[in-house]
Amino acid sequence: MNISKNLILTALVFPVVALGIFTAFKKYKFEVGTKIVLPISGYDPRDLLSGHYLVYTVEYGATPDCDMRSKPEPSYYCIDSKRFYRFKPSTCSAIIRGRCQYNRFLADIEKFYIPEDKASELDKLVRGKEAAIEISVQYDGTAQVRDLLINGKSWRELY
Image (cartoon, rainbow, N blue to C red; front, side, top):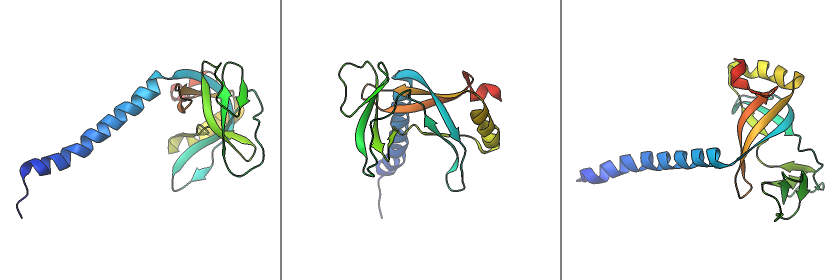
């Protein structure tokens, strides 16, 4: 079987280059978005298959206009007015796009991975202190969690 060296080299280099481009794109989205801090309340469930996640409820300062349907429906949270909308508002400078499901607004920012050796300590800190998340919100409303804050400081500063 005669396979050209260029074909083998391409097959080896292409996945590495693609992964690098994907990582750079994610980092760009992470850094460019509007940074917002939202308070949370939560707990630390243990899941042996997916590691340790701090799962919490985001305190938006308003009650979402969601009903008890199990099928998710698009919804938006306007950061300026601290209100929820069923349709994308045009007057907000920053919005969080999510979905209403089971009477909750979910924006896929409701969990944060924490190292296994810090899990129990962080769980106690989140339960007993003022906890918040710093998120990065893109122009299209997608949000990513940047950091977990305990009393206004990054959890990394506490260790």
